Length: 162
Image 1 (cartoon, rainbow, N blue to C red):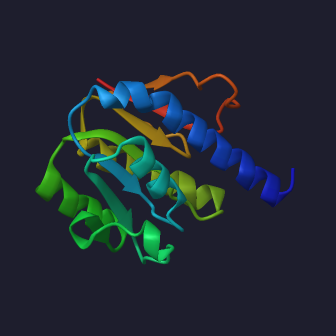
Image 2 (image 1 turned 135 degrees about the horizontal axis):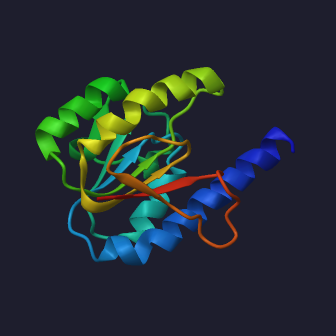
């Protein structure tokens, strides 16, 4: 599979998972967290899925299309380890959905990041909420759910927070 084909498959899986989770998220209180803005595609999709919902975004350095940049009061700007701590102080464990799509292309570095990222995000997740991640994250109170129909196994990871 080419890099382009892999990217397209990952984006389709991400979109299918978000669409699949929408009915469950609609019934939950709390904000949505987008960890990794990138060019803003997913943030834009989240705004379409959840109009009027508070969506907070975490990004090291904004490089998105101007139409896909959140307002300043919904943007945590800087390295994730620092900004997640800031969000814990500001928001607490209130998120209905956390979507994370962080990564470097270096498998070992991504695994190392996942070791601290899951527990850090857990501090923002409300009981009964969902986490959607581009990599496996190990958190004791998170139960992995099966992929929606049509999403290949281990392409994306869905968790329910107990």
